Amino acid sequence: MPGASTADGVQLAQNTCTGTAGQIFTLTTTGAGYRLTAAHSGKCAGVRDASTSAGKPVQQETCTGATSQTWQLTASGNAYRLVNANGGKCLNVKDNATTAGAPLQQNSCDSVATKQWTLRPAGGTPTTTPTSTPTATPTVTPTSGGGDGSGPWPTATGSVKLSDTQQVTNFDGGMKSYYGIGDGGQSESQDPMFEVANGGTIQNVIIDAPAGDGIHCLGSCTIRNVWWNDVGEDAATFLSSSSSATYLVDGGGAKSASDKVFQHNGAGTVTIRNFQVHSSGKLYRACGNCSTSYQRHVVMNGVTARSTKVLAGINTNWGDTARFSRITVYGSAVICEKYKGVPKGSEPTKIGEGADGVNCIYSASDITYR
Image (cartoon, rainbow, N blue to C red; front, side, top):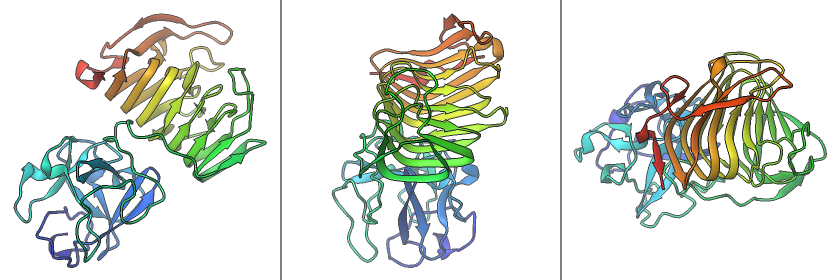
C-alpha cells in the first residue's frame, strides 16, 4: 500500500518486500473465494467502481462483502493467479512493469509473469508449491480453473436430510450435502429444498437427489458456490414479479438435469457466472407459458458446459435477452434458442437460434469450443 495509507480509494502498488505496514494482508473466506484485508488498515482489496473492465485499478476500500472484493486463488505453475469474482479478471501489474511503485489493476487472465503471485507468511519465505489450501487455512478450497467455471467438483463435509422446505434469508451450508425432498425426477409441483427470501443469500451448499425443485428465489437473491450433484425438477427457480429483480448465480455447478437447470418464471435479470454444467438439457429457460408473461433477461459470464444441449432458451416476442461472454463448450451445444411465448396451457414454439445482436447477444470470440 503506497505510504501505508489507510484511506479509501488508494490504488495498490508493487514494491520491494520489506514486511512493513501496508505489505501484509490476511486471507479470509467469503462465499466462493477470499477477502484480502490489509493488516494495517483493516480495509479490503477491491476493483474500483466494481468494474468488470480490463485495466481498472485495484484499490483499498472499506470492506462491504461486495463481489468485487472477492478473489479466487487458482494454481498457476509454482504460483497463483488472483481472479476477481466480479469480472473474472486477474490481479496484474500495470504495463507488466517490474519497477517499484507500479500500480496494480485487473486484466484478462493469462500466463504473463506479472499475473502470477506467491503467498508468503508474514516474516516467512514464499510458498513454492501451491496447495489446495492457502496459508490462511480457509474452509472453502480455491478452484483450479481461471474463474470460468472449470474448477474441480467439491466433496461434501457431511450430509443433512431435509423433510420439508427450509425458509432462509442468509444461509451458509458449510459445504454439506442436503437431500430428501421429492422423487428425484421431473414430476411437476415438487416442493423446493430451500426458499430464499427477497434479498437473501444461500451459499456453500451441495444438493443431492432427491432434491425436489431445488431452490426457489422469492425475490432478488444470490446463490453462491452451490453445487447440484443431480438436478431433479429444476436446480433453481426465480419468481419475483418485479422487473428490477436481480438474481445472481455465482460459482458452483450442476449435473444431470434431464430438462432445465435454471427456470426463470418471474421477471428481472438472472446472472450466471463462473459456473459449470454437465450432462444437462438447458442451462437456462425463460418460461414460455407461465400464467403471467414477463420480459426476462439472462447474462452468462464464465460458463463451462459439457454434454449439455442448450445454454439458454428465451422468448423473443416478449423482448427477452440473453448475453454471453467467456463461454467454453466441450463438444457441441446450441448457445441461444428463440421461442414464441404463449399463454398458459399452450406450448411455446421454437422459432430460431443463434446470435442476432438483439435478443441473443454474443460474438464468435465469446464462445470457445473444445
